[in-house]
Image 1 (tube, helix red, strand yellow):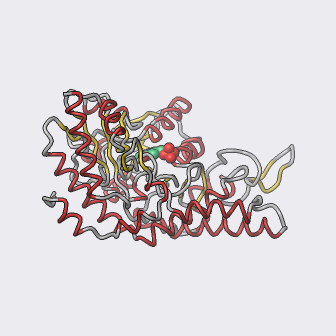
Image 2: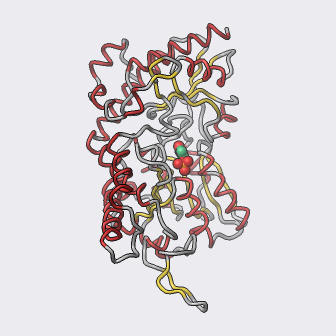
Length: 418
Ligand SMILES: *Cc1c(COP(=O)(O)O)cnc(C)c1O
């Protein structure tokens, strides 16, 4: 990595006008324990720009009605806005068709939907291949499916840098592999997986591929057609949008052939006690009243991100990560967990002699918000022989000064506990 040496040269080279962008995020201007808030827990959830907050409020103030049901004007307006949000998501991930965009609660629900519905036909001996760096949301639904179906879970290992061992991944693929589920960007390590390569290998073995895009969508441009993934899952709240809304993308031919996930209103065409027929895509998978305001505000978040530009956001975050990585390397006793060549936005580390939770507490007292713990990736912690890490994760509004504040606070924790 070609990390610049000092903060001011990094600052000068940043592609975004962060001072201006920060004004879009009302929450960021507060103080915590008398110190300016330094919010570095973006991998858990990002803060929301005013346009998103106002969009959701405006929906309830001006447009609230149920969708797809009423002929009255409000219901039609709400339906139009909800369906326009689907078009926005379709363009954002470059899906071929709008029916391929299913609104769900988030990444977790999207993966559970695929496990429950696509997995319904899995039989004893079928194999599901995941990786050692997956989030629990991309492990446990497959374990549950294996318990139900008799399928077998295989796990491709990572190396000491936190990169996937593609040779081992390839060896684990075989005629029994029905599905590969892999993250695009690891929330615990920051590793970016080489999806084109993994997807090509999986397809050559006859498996379908689900991509966990929960981290990736806020940091990398995503094109599901170019990737040729079969399913892609993400959450609104890590993309500057609301909680409780997310997306499952699925290729239409696959979604069409899949049985419904949940039964209820909106997902049916005709209900009699003898037999019920199901609605077309995507409504077959959207039982019940959806998070209408959430979907519309998610579209506002996507518009915001598109306005700033994902390539510029990525370049900004890469510069911060390179600077933080270099500064961290100069701190005695600080061990980075996750040093893969292809990384984004995440600095995970331990500090010798200080438990990660104690580091987190001192950081909080300095106004610095980071995540400490296993990051819903306990197998990653086991792989590196640590109970937990401290994780700083960057977003478009973070600054070089905030990286400096993080490292000052780490020094402080070393003083207090050293
Ligand atoms: C956050 C996260 C999830 C789960 O997302 P939810 O919004 O909690 O459903 C899954 N995978 C990764 C990589 C994540 O970072």
